Amino acid sequence: MTPQQSNEMFNQVRDILKKLDRSIDDARERRLASDGDDDHAGQPAEPFDPSRPGRARPMSRPGDGPTSFGTAQPQIG
Image (cartoon, rainbow, N blue to C red; front, side, top):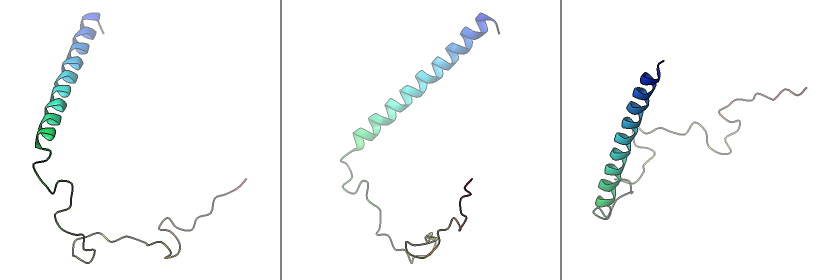
């Protein structure tokens, strides 16, 4: 790789990072500008109902016995 190619690649990466930085700054500004507009921000749309179809159920509960990882024992020695 020639020094000129190396400089071109460096400049391309630098430009991409600058563009990404501007994008992050713009997104942050939009987020901060919208804070406080919605009284329910950060809250679920409806209470959680574990019996509702389509919801994942836990594979095991505390106290149900062996964990879902099986019963393998570590080998010593």
